[in-house]
Amino acid sequence: MYDKGFIEAENGTYGFGFEKGGDGFVQWSVIPLRLTASGHEYIESISDPQIWATLKSKFKNGSIETWQIAAKELLEIGIKVAIKHGISA
Image (cartoon, rainbow, N blue to C red):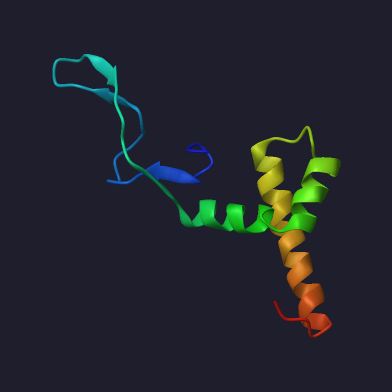
């Protein structure tokens, strides 16, 4: 999720979990994370039941990147169809 830009350290520092101290010692620590704008968009798109069902059935072996692209495109198609037919949420 971090490498795809969906989450990041809350304080804006690079990485999460591993920290290198002044003595060069690397340790694991808890760093607060936040969901990025991309993460929110991804969650919003896959929270649609029809998109979720499509991803699970047609892209079940896809990577998270494939799911991100497919979910975004499916959401955009759904929005265009809704606008065309005058459907509101």
